[in-house]
Every structure is written in structure tokens, then in C-alpha cells.
Length: 161
Image (cartoon, rainbow, N blue to C red):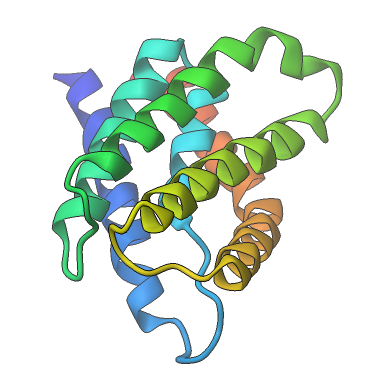
């Protein structure tokens, strides 16, 4: 029962990460907050937990309007991000800057996948918009990643995660 509370906290964070960019000022590049939440979970837990969190966050991105096409692409790329960061976790303790840098590489990989799917004719994405999304995501991650990893550590210390 107690571990269910940790899952509920993560689910609430993912829902908030999907809905908050809708309140972002129009005309500004929107950060991808789901990737930041997935990174925070994946950096502290085994790769399976990061992959499942990424899968859940990607499904939310794919299903909540306006959604994404093709359906499931966001879920698979977010799951791959969670899995990759979870696998890199043992080497990231060398420096406090490394988790942020690896998160930046993972976010860039997810955005490249979005660009490739748009280039294949599914949706419309401009490379400049993707670059600004990456910049905004990394700026937000610089502030949120320490807070979210601290929350994950607290959940683990309470036995909720």
C-alpha cells in the first residue's frame, strides 16, 4: 500500500507536467516537463522504473489533446529516455553536473526523434522550435531536476518509492 503512494505522487507529477505547458505564455518555446520528471525518476531508480515512468508520461503526452502522431511514438521515446538514464545512473555520481548534462543529451535525442517523425511526414515540426524547446527544457531542468530528485530521495527514505 505504501509503495502505491509513491506511484501516485509520480502520476500526479506527470499529469502536472503534461498540463502546465498549456499555461505557458503564447509565442514562447515550451519546455518538455515530462522529460524532466522522467529524468528525475530514472536518475535515482533502476532502469525498469525509469522506463515505466517514461512510458506512462509518453502515453499521457500522446493522449492528452492535442496529442501526438503517430500514437505511441512519444511513449516509446520517453521510455527509452528513462531506460537510458537508469542504465547510466551508476556513473553519474562523479559530478553533480553530470545528471543535468546526461538529461540534456536524452532530451536532445527525444527531440531528434520528433524531428525525424515530422520529416517522415507525420506532423509538422520546425528545427528552430525544437532547438528552443531544448533550451527551455534545459533551463527549467536546471531548477527542477534537483527539486524532483530530492523529492524522489525523500519518497525512497520514507519507503514509498
